[in-house]
Structure formats: structure tokens, C-alpha cells
Length: 320
Image (cartoon, rainbow, N blue to C red; front, top):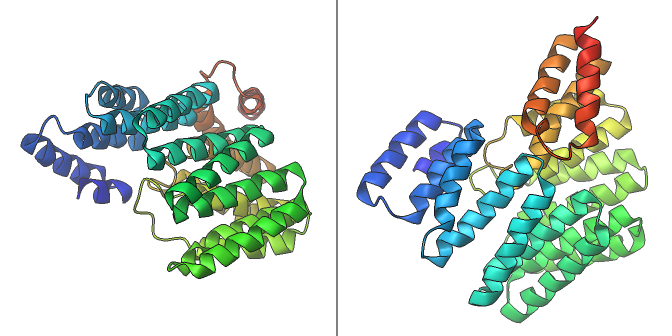
């Protein structure tokens, strides 16, 4: 129940439910996880880190597993990409040592996704290929779908549109064989990126809109709404519809569930909203969003280039 309230952004009822669970079993790893998530979603990142750190001190392997997942998410939220990758590598080593292929596939795919977002596309493809082998060996259809989807995205970003198209067709065929046809959102998302790379902006918007229409209501820490909204916003912006793009970026910044493992997308959404606000002469809103972005990533070392630009633009606005 605490997690249900949490994903709805109802933090006080979530805290009440957490307190009840804690009173029944104070040492259960899930209590540290939920308390950490409560802090995370409210922006109390130092407090979240302490709770996630407690998970990694537990004897039960599942505690360490969840701790590493959350610590990687927290680092990504802070813009600390190298630290996030280090936590994911540690997770890979833990899963390999325990022979936990489900855990292993999760860490490999998260690492591949992070590599893709950093532009290390060969690394991303390599990780996806490893995940595909695991999916085949351990009969994990969800991993198979996710790995094909991510590999297609990386290939599209590399400019290999024809190969990405072939993977998209294979992904669609795989989903059609399964029970949950709403997984076709992965296919439409991939087709949207392929169209965007080809500068066919109308097709890109149409494909990603189909993908978004197939998303479930945000109700899980594994939901990936931020990723879908981000691509649709990019497609709208490229098509010249800045207002629609802004609305999508604002939806990202309003997420609870749906952005846990996409903290970089969440943080950057404030910067992108600010840029659009500034272009639209909504200067006070732009300044507020630049400030929120700087508050999240301003202490990152090394700072990403967006931080220098955000500070420069904020100075221009404040000195007018």
C-alpha cells in the first residue's frame, strides 16, 4: 500500500503505511527500500542515499541487489554518470557470482541504456547482444524484447537505420507471439526514433504517439514513461511544435513512477523546458526551471555542458 501511494505522489499516506510496515518487521529490506524511495521522490537525495546504503549492508543478497539498483538510479539523477556505471558494474559482478541471470540481465541492460545515452553506442550494442544471449539461455521473453528494443535504438542513433528497421520488424513479430500486445509500444518507440533520425518528423510524432497511447498507468518502479515522453517531446520540437514539446517535458518533471531509472532524463527536462520558455519570452518561468536544473546538477564534477549554458542564460534573464 505504501508503494501505491508513493507512485501517486501521495507522500503522507505512503509514510503512514511505511511506519506500519516498519513496526511489524523493522529489519526487512523492503522497509529501507521504501523509505529511501520516499526521500528520493521528494528530492531529499542525501537521505535517500543513506537508506539505500543500509540495503547494501544487509546480509541478504536481495538487499545488496536492490541497493545497487537504487544507488545507480540516484547517481544518474545527480548527473554522476561514471558513478552510476560503477554501481551497475558492481551489480553485474554480484549477479554473476550468485548465478542470478534475471538480476544479471537487468544490470546489463541498464548499463547498455546508460552507454547509449552517453553516446557510447558500440558499448550499448555489445551489452544488448549479451542480454539477448542470456534471454535465450534462460528463457526470459521480457529481456529478449527489451534487448532488441534497446539495440535497435542504439543502431538508429549510429545511423544504421536499415539494420534498426530489421530489428524493429523482429521485435514486432516477437511481441505478436506474446500475450501482452501493449508491448508494441516498444516497436512504435523504436520506429519513432528511426523516423526522427531520418528527419521524417511527422512519422516520428505519429509513431511515438502510438507508443505513448499503449503505456500503462504509472504504478511500478520499472515503468519507463520518462523515456517515451522524452522522445515524443524531441519529435514535436524537431517538427516545430515547441509548445507540445514543452507540455511533454513538463509531464516528465511531474512524474513519480515512470522516472526512477531515468533520473538524467527527469533532471534535463527542467533545462529543456527552460530553453523553450525562454524562446517564448516566458522569462520568469524560464529562470525558475534553469534554477531547478542547476540545483540538481550544478554540483556535478565535471559539470555537463548544459549547466554552463543554464547559468549563462539565467544570468542574462536576471540582468535584464
